[in-house]
Length: 275
Image 1: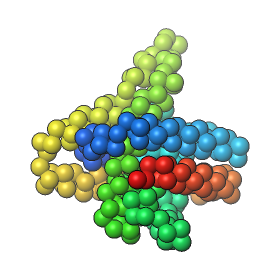
Image 2: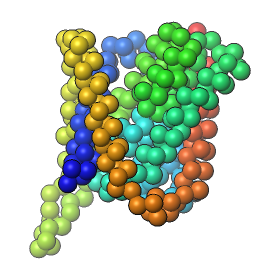
Image 3: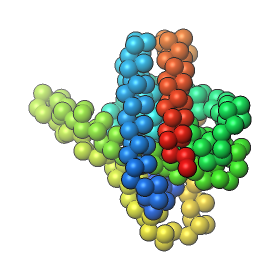
């Protein structure tokens, strides 16, 4: 019961607290043209990753979850879309493992490529923010090029994070047909917007007001890390290795192909947006 609680509730609470990292004022500073390009990148990355996963014949909800995690914000997006679609916990293990693996690889690979290509700091930061999965991985990648790169990376990344809400809501709406009750009568329909997504949006608005003290923001960031760590531990503890490796090499190949696609798209965006 404890592992089930951590895998479901802690993951959703962590997603809610993620909202305190997003300030709409900072994101609006990018300008409408940049925001539209970032939204287009997320859309193309999502569609491309989904198509790649389908081409590799990944089972069940894996294509949708991997596409969400790679294109938006890693583990948070996988957990949010899985909850909206009511995907079983064990079916999220492979997508979470793959987005974590590729995001971790980016921490070492992108700085090396950025140096070889002699990218300016701001261009490298935009590239990291546009193509690395989790917020923490973006910070770890971009800070290697200094504060200018880090500032650019974080703002671009948070613009992608904002898209978590509409994508999750769309995933919930698509699956919205009512379930049948035990007596065959129509059951309740899933909510248009899951409660934790509404909480995520509410905390974005609260952060944007500038009323939240820095101490509370720091404590919330630490709490989010703890919640995600507990949720990932719970998911890992439920893994049956035979089930994990059902799609094995195909899943890894699809993830690496998707990672390459998003990296190329992110680099193209960085070149366009660089001054």
